Image (cartoon, rainbow, N blue to C red; front, side):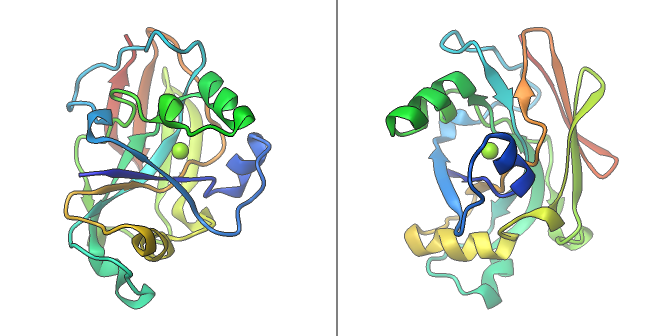
Length: 203
Ligand code: MG
């Protein structure tokens, strides 16, 4: 399986990092080794001094497809979860400045923890999914799918022009404003609505 991550999909987050609001989706990949076994702690990596959380809604792909049309896009994912797109912001800034790829900043081991479960999409209003992230019990990020620049179906259409989607693939749909650093000892708790999706200890 592969993990596809959309960048800059909320204009308030693009602005906080001084990035232009994109005219088409931006995406990058993480390998399957970026997953974190459920309920494991996350170990702060040695190669960064500025590790940031980015809390994001996540899609699970349920059907193989390429060049998917907008009309059928909704049939290619069946459930929605929540995840963290961990980012070594210091390394990413260096990569951006030098025009280098982002893998060392984004695709490292355990950099894509997922929620303990996914919610069947029929149980959600896809255009109004509210989600939030708490750090040590304090609200740090709050988002809603209605504020996405490119909605879920548009993401499916766009990405599938370039690569096939396969069953079990995961798509991170971008983070709202409020990204920030973590340190050892912190606890991140993610919610969709008022339902706790994950609780992650940083060690
Ligand atoms: Mg992200």
